[in-house]
Image (cartoon, rainbow, N blue to C red; front, side, top):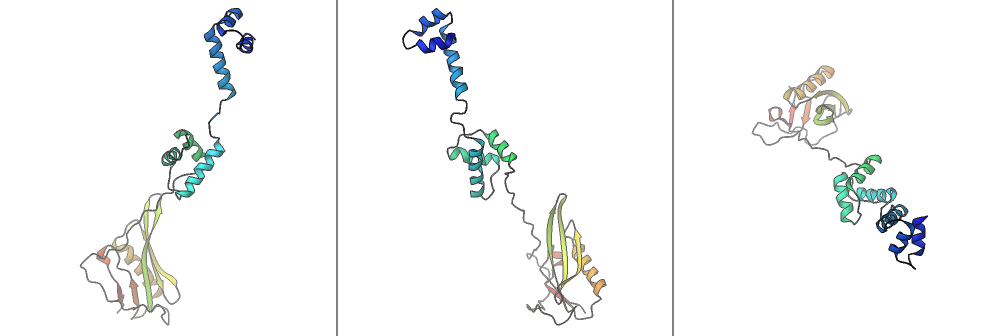
Length: 213
């Protein structure tokens, strides 16, 4: 009540006189007034979470998901959005907004070698007339929690069926020879089969195309 009385009459009497009359100090009056103003307007100039999230989502789409929270925070500041980095981090984590990691590329072909390469017997004729006339093969890789896993698949071009495969955590020669061995024992092809592959890596197993005797 004392401070309210001083506030109501400060236009007519000096604050020091009113404070002396009410038995309070001028500094106490001014501190009480400042606390009241801060309580009445706690969020003045502060962007709401919904508005900030809208800015974050717009930037996330614009940069194709490449920004994590540190770069997102810097981008917001660059656009005139004054916000703390910790608030950006928490809001992005809450809504599952994170940087999209680029998939690493693993080379499975190495043509830079001096080893002999078989002639291309297939000549882009990918439509054999019967099974076990032409097989084709390639290597791919799969990311796992324990590292890269390499897969070789051999396909019969006539039926497009997988006739052999091999999976290893490396690209040594047995990765390919195991797949060939599986295909051979499953199909028992007659002489004349063409096996067409890429120039595989490592060079010790490099082959473009070979024909069974």
